[in-house]
Structures are given as C-alpha cells and as structure tokens.
Length: 118
Image (cartoon, rainbow, N blue to C red):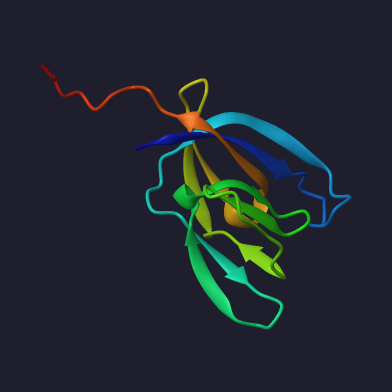
C-alpha cells in the first residue's frame, strides 16, 4: 500500500537543528520502495526502521513516531542518499536524504491496484 507524506526540506544553507529553516515540498507519494531509516541510539547502537512503520519523522530534533503511537528520541536519524517522490503535480523528483527535515504521513494512496473485484 502506498502512503502520501507531507515532506519538509532544509533550506540549502540551514544546519540541522531545532532552529533550522525549512520549506514544504507539499504532499508527495514516495516512489522508492522499502525506504529504511537508520536510527542511532544514545548508547551508540544503530538499527533500521522501515518508513512505512512511521507516522512522523523529524530530523530537526531527532524524533520519530511509529504507527503504534510510540515516540522515540534517538541521537541521530539518517535517511538513504536519494529518495524518489512524486509531487502532487505529478512530477517525479529525487531528494537527497540529508535534505529532508520532516516527513509526516497524510494517508494512503487511493488509486487502487487496477484489479477488478466482484
């Protein structure tokens, strides 16, 4: 199932942090499948979390919220080098993972699967 996300990007001159300036890319559908987020805990342990399991990801103050409502505040959150998205205007665009400040799930894509059901 494809989800739509509201994506905010860091301004090119912004440094990641709570006061970083961002701009909204708007509602997008992520084309890249199986996007994994690398989460580094304060202990130094790292693990992967699939983006489909998250409802919100905020890199300005490292935080993420899972679909189960659990909020975590890791030391660091990293995204893949490039993520391909389809914007609300229908254009495809590649985004560098370091450029993404926030991703918030908006809902599922209701385009259907193309299958006929009776």
